[in-house]
Length: 159
Ligand SMILES: Nc1ncnc2c1ncn2[C@@H]1O[C@H](COP(=O)(O)OP(=O)(O)OP(=O)(O)O)[C@@H](O)[C@H]1O
Ligand SMILES: [Mg+2]
Image (cartoon, rainbow, N blue to C red; front, top):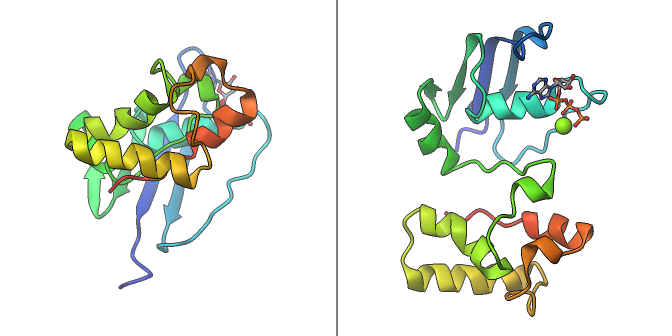
């Protein structure tokens, strides 16, 4: 394995929300090593969430490029392919939990990746097990406590 391989590269990214001043001006960043854990630190409102949204294609930069897994990502279809390999946890758990029950919410991702019902069933069971959430499967996501929502969002990646 080439551990020096670039996983995600942002080049010359410029971005401003409509009617607001520039948040990023020619910003660049690289995630290089598989297995690395990188902390992105900045004051409230400095643009961390915005940067992640640009990185996975939820926001489009005014200038610059996003390259991931060796391919420049421009169109929604490019980002869709990339999102099969990268997950983003939203800052607010309520932006992410939208299915009626915990089990259905866990199933949502793998079902959308085209997994069979048997595979999804296995994934749901496994996920509940490793997150220590056995017994939560039929709980209404909306009624989970803040901490429970937080844990639940750390669903593993399914591929
Ligand atoms: N949809 C939006 N429209 C206009 N301005 C926005 C929008 N979303 C965020 N902002 C503004 O852009 C700036 C960056 O916001 P962002 O959420 O990226 O910051 P952050 O670094 O993640 O902050 P925090 O540490 O509080 O989570 C802030 O000034 C914020 O008010
Ligand atoms: Mg944020």
